[in-house]
Length: 399
Image (tube, rainbow, N blue to C red; front, side, top):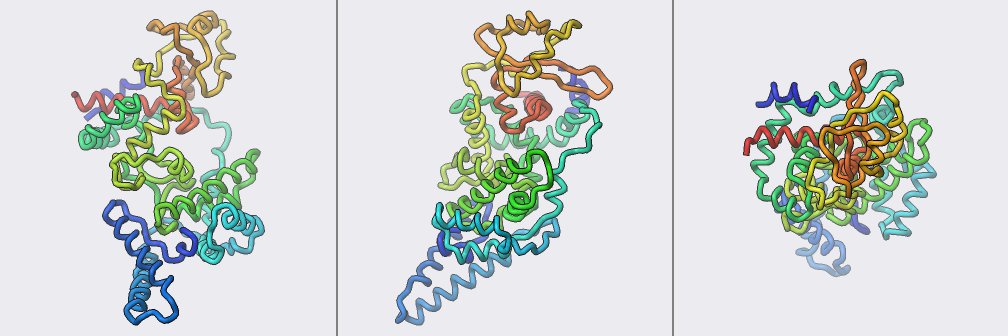
């Protein structure tokens, strides 16, 4: 493919528990120890008035462990500021719903909100880019299809070859697509984000910047904040130990908390969905997400096909088809879209344009599997980068 030419040259809180929840760990053993300590904390709390000195000692030990866990929270790389979120009416309404709908302890929830900080950098980062700058596929893809990321992808694939093969057999998602997504998202876990998820989600849920879709975006982040608290309670971890992107995405595959709850898979069988420390869980979860969003395992061919478009411009309305495959090959042909290889007649397709700034736009015909990737990130550039990175890693492995 045209955009691979330079690459080929460069290949080488539960009820009453939130205030004493334990810090998260990236390993199963650490999480198991955390759960055991949390249980000890519960036992110390539920003792009768006449409990023995021994049980008091256990309670003190649990409290000390919890305090140490809070002190050991991972370092963050932004300066959040106190915002007194608990004084905001919208936040109080949110707390009321979490107590009424999910059984959260009000005092513990109040304490969590009290510790939550406002992150102005998150507000700035979600603002749209200034208008007028032309899209440039070559520049965009160059950030992801490059030797360092390809080399890291080869190592990741080699280290997790059996798991990738198992996921491909079970879900029908090729290993190269899974590898491409995790590579584009975090360079295989190297850069998963250092924002406290609770902080950025609370900030964006209740102080999203002015925008045409502000109401919808605030509702989205409000739901994700709720999911974060539910996830922390389910896994019995300190919600402030969850670090992620400026928008709250977590782990190697950068799942939003709600998607961890919905699509996360315990693929290493340790009883925990750990997208931060388990490559197997990340692999299984990515494959599961794609299947749940339309990946067609019966279509084992390419997801995209190079295309040429006719000067008549009759094909332009096809670009308004949205992120879905909806056209038969005959419809594409009648509109002046021609592919270098024949398209199977029993599939639906969409027309994709990859703008290249002042250079000519690239056109591709894409099937349902391409559009399943766009459900991960609603961008043609993103989906094509996933495909090309995965292909480049596969080629570089030489197996």
